[in-house]
Image 1: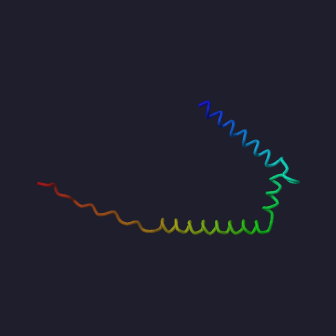
Image 2: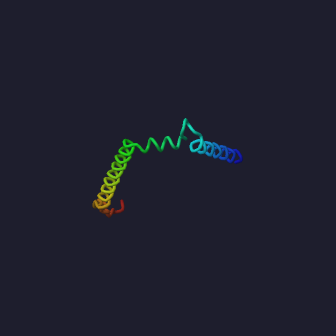
Image 3: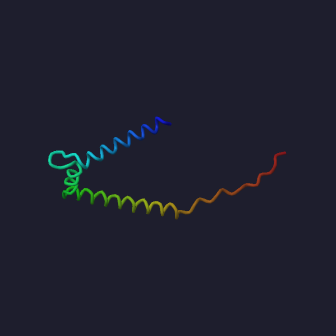
Length: 88
């Protein structure tokens, strides 16, 4: 139990250091966060994001249609119960 707590504390400390490095440590003239913002702000990145969003919308639309069709299909009737006579 104490080992799990220690592991979580260490993981949290590593996450904090990584987050601070991402936003505060410069790589050349900019931090990694500034580099990432610059790359994601380009035209091709915006086009790729728009294409992914469009594909996601089409998937959701198709899945919604499939679910509606499955819900509206008539269910097969339950087999008729047969009255069995006791064996002699």
